[in-house]
Image 1: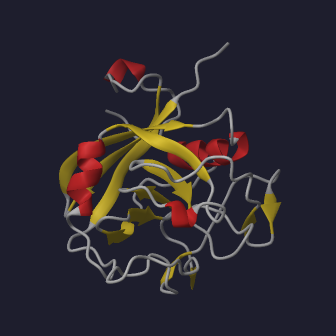
Image 2: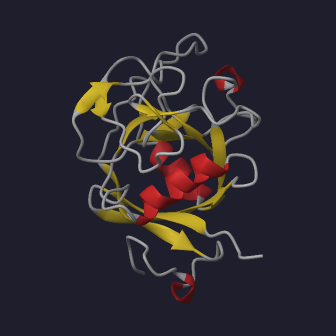
Length: 209
């Protein structure tokens, strides 16, 4: 059985290299969602995550990103958070959701594949959305367990390596969500194992080591 590749993002903060995050995707539970994310990471269809920004960062909650250079549309709906914590999805404008998949497309996005996986720990990958069945390129990385998002956002992966990079980026955030620096995905693609040796890069990745 062929090995399922990990996804990597190389992160820059204000133009300086901040490290690499490697994600394990849950293909066995949410195959279509994982496939969509992986192909956006590799830029297989001519667009993807490389060059995109983490535009919303809230400490003790999440880091959010969307595919870059698209027209603006309303951001995902609000969720209830502890007192004193800013909302993550509060109607600001972010790049529109563009997806490659036609199997699961529906209006402006694609269907919620399932909600089997829960937001039980830090470092989970989950789809952001504006309403049910409006998934696309927007995703977020949790920095704490967030059960209030269960049944609303589709969990599809986790950080396998580089959670220290996630935590460093989290410190740049604010209660309003506005980052204190520009956090960019400088390179993205796939690797055969999470050790990220240059020889393990897969042909067709957006970036090179």
